[in-house]
Figure 1: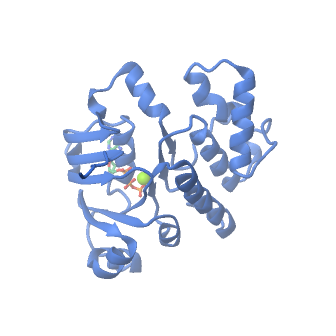
Figure 2: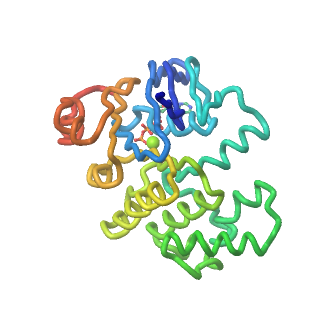
Figure 3: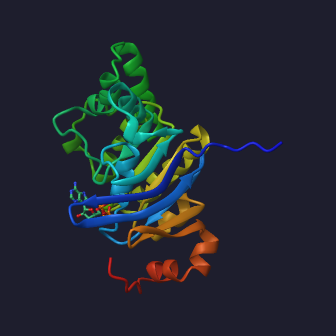
Length: 251
Ligand SMILES: Nc1ncnc2c1ncn2[C@@H]1O[C@H](COP(=O)(O)OP(=O)(O)OP(=O)(O)O)[C@@H](O)[C@H]1O
Ligand SMILES: [Mg+2]
């Protein structure tokens, strides 16, 4: 008997439009449980929009976006909140609340979910700070932290609600090699230890090689390449051009 595993995320023939701008022109892909996939593609190709479709921040014009078997476009109110709780997103630039302490930034999603038990909040915040290697900085403000530290706080915040899916939007952009390595290692650790299905958008090819086994390339509105790194980086001409910087295609 064969058992089929339900993909964590599944896109079928997804089209996205902003007025005359037809960004996605039939996206098809699936993310399997626990897998780390890197999404590559030129600036403006629609990578961030793919992440926003997964958490229901943007609606497709056509096609189907399913997360854990549920059609995202059909969700509203509490169901959409539940989806966002089970999906952690590290936004481009970390997007912390500048006026809130590190503690309150990390506790934010839990409070939104209705968690009022301060002991529990304390425990979770302490634990997540330990996980990202920044214990004891609960009372600091984001402005007192370096870019790399802010990214790690963004990670701790995304992990606070124990997500099943993590979406990373350019998690290492602007970071020095040591901080980059640290973030890469955290992405790998979370995926392995917590079995978190992860989608990483990055322009950093070295990171893309380190964190994932599978690459997808978004080009001209479709997934133009999809497969194990070794395979697509050697055999796919588009991927080879993209990686080598000899990309000539108009987006
Ligand atoms: N809310 C919006 N309203 C209108 N157009 C939008 C909106 N969000 C994105 N777009 C357009 O959709 C396209 C894809 O944007 P997206 O942010 O997904 O690109 P990206 O691949 O993430 O690029 P980058 O690598 O620069 O971050 C762009 O042409 C952008 O201008
Ligand atoms: Mg983007």
